[in-house]
Length: 256
Ligand code: GLU
Image (cartoon, rainbow, N blue to C red; front, side, top):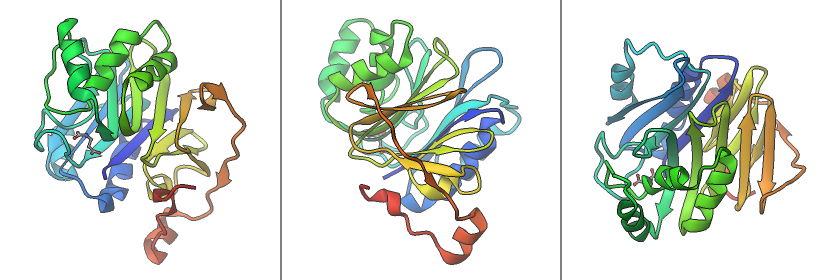
């Protein structure tokens, strides 16, 4: 297991990303990282093996102001815990960043194909095929590219994609790994579990297997089989403080 967080909205993304990851520490991890989309119109990735404090140290002085970003705590399945294997992973041209929880079973075959078509890899992970496939299939629309990636991969994933070529948008995919979406007063949230978004979001939705979500600055659309559906968000009544005091039942770790 590992933790995923994402934010798009009016506030700086980094404080939520770090706090959200902290609240997901109970899931276990060996390394961590964040990516934000910055004013200079590029994606900044910071990663570190070890505890979140190590990542915090690496972030010191970076002055990341971006209002969209993703974060990850990794539990290595493919490739040792190292800075290079930590998420977020980018494609070799640096336009797509992805955090992923799970296993891409056919990654070796995909990696061979991608290497053959000129994509270079900088990690040992199965995950790195995801941003590189997004680079192959991208035709101006990140959601469609993520769907095309989904068709190529076998395995399990909760994954979030972002790109500087289609900014102001996060795309989330879920298959056999938990992912929730939250609505706050100042923006939209993604997380592996509810504690991460307590005190930030007032409504949430547990994505079901096979669903994808498109989060823009104007709203959230949830899709099943590429068809937008009406999904009801639940009110999130528990505050972060109450959850700390009473303990939180991590109910979204189960299928709804
Ligand atoms: N399989 C991926 C990796 O080894 C993701 C592991 C995870 O779920 O944290 O990097």
